[in-house]
Image (tube, rainbow, N blue to C red; front, side, top):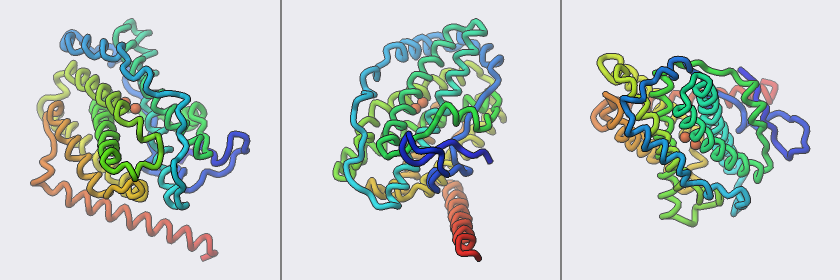
Length: 327
Ligand SMILES: [Fe+2]
Ligand SMILES: [Fe+2]
């Protein structure tokens, strides 16, 4: 597995091993690329009015003033060592995840311009703009914690995962919509319980999540430009596979980051279930098939997998302790 370039400490500190909560594992966000030549063959005429509307919304740039680079992002109260690690781990993964979106959209934009698809190139350029702002903002919150991530270097050292275009369309649609629900549910909770709001970063989540919502709507439009992706057995298989994998990754991440949600005064299991319910409901408008979360074995199976993941983590930590003790 690739070693990250994350360092703990100030900018002047020479490279030191990443703190445990910054280490790479199965749930660390990946960097992706896809069949760009095929993306350049997208028939926008099938969705021309929706495309024009989305491009106009992105050009309007409603959040131009929102991500104030001078806004202080220092934490408002002290946290225990475990809580601090949970918060920092949340920041690192969210930052890498936003940066991963930026890289994918930037590369698609560049290659679509090259392929003489300027309208699509512009749309991806505007989405890359948003993701760069999001990653930059999270990076500033990390700097306030005394942690620096060298994102450009990180992107050259981590392996790039290749996905067929259909996989990118399905998975990015879901990632954007699940991202929307994560941000908005935290925002609603903190507005109802302001005493739990321990960092100014959270005050930026509401317009931020609208960016993710728009990106999801753009991917909805792009999926509809490829009607075969939503029909027959293939449509059902793509829907089922990506709902399952995105939801499971979400559950495992929330389980691993339980302490972070508890500092916010949230119940991680309830948050996880609500994010899935809402994202599944949103996906119903786009995918030909979604889960029946109330009446299927999905939740049971997921609970068993999460329990298995917890046992594996406990075994790994026990093993690490034994190694540290010379056992
Ligand atoms: Fe984002
Ligand atoms: Fe996004």
